[in-house]
Image 1 (cartoon, rainbow, N blue to C red):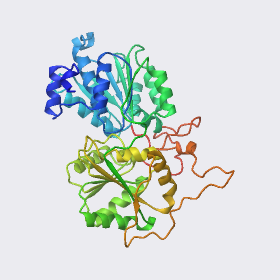
Image 2 (image 1 turned 30 degrees about the horizontal axis):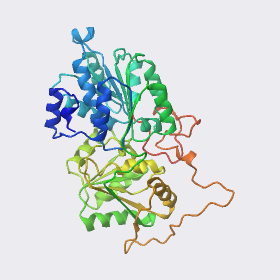
Image 3 (image 1 turned 90 degrees about the horizontal axis):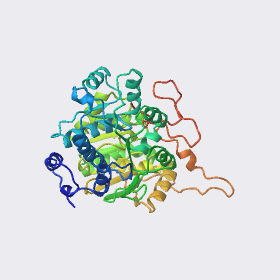
Image 4 (image 1 turned 45 degrees about the horizontal axis):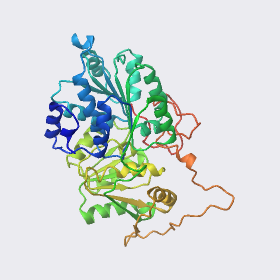
Length: 438
């Protein structure tokens, strides 16, 4: 199938061609007709499958073909499409897609998120836009200041819905939905549909079409997985050895915490490896610059927390290194999804110490296969990697219910959500950078 067979306008086909695309991905081929027909949609697609274009393209077409509202006729349009996303980086990426594919439509778009000044956003909203991409926290700031008008929204898109739930945005999302017109199209895109996300889908979506193009929690099919067993104290030296031995030039390295990311980035820099850290405590300008430099090949390494596990679209990223395994196995899938994208192959290498053996076991259970492991000469671990079996009649040490407390907001069902960033709420022990970012 070609894009030209999906009923898209000449202006959109021209923009698609300028981006070098002719053939839609499976999620695009399945979702675009439903969205063009005005149906609600529940789409499950693993990361890197082109789901942003799957909703951007048909929504651009619907907006272009719709009759102008009275506000548009006088040059001041309230947004007709609202896209909610969990992170600043994803907001910027979606906005870039809207502008690229909508280059010949004359439609206006804006992304609003925290970490930058609110006044330029207010001015842009006053001038009028057609598509608003927003993180929930900053959008609520605008709504509370009455600088955003959602009364004309015809389509709501919840992108990375599971991540927004995990980051504690569910209450904010419900507050935003209360401000929207009752009659509207609703689209929900997610890499996984946990029970809580499915509950939200049932509450928001009306008779939705279902698109599912990958098995649940599936890893990128073209990614090679491997593990090197090493003592925790040797991980930094081993990573430096791998850079030197293999001449790595573009590696996304994941750590659990902001402090750990900064410390590792400094160590790599001291060794002469151009490196930047990316996490929630960095200013938006610093985060944007680090990501741009990494994409441009100016950095050999980008050391990040799970804030980078979703929403980062990096062409032909050769490898992802898990310096530390995530506490929740699904996050492993999202991390490695940064490589092996758009038909390219990739490598996912994990440096695993003995204290991470349970996390490794849970990841292998999720993948339904054992990951090949090895030991590097000179870095042989001195501690056992055997996974202890739980005693009879006693629960295992790693309880799935507790594992839902991830990314600083995904408490187990029935537990209270943490307060919004800046609200003074205490952070749970082990809290890492997957916390909420406006």
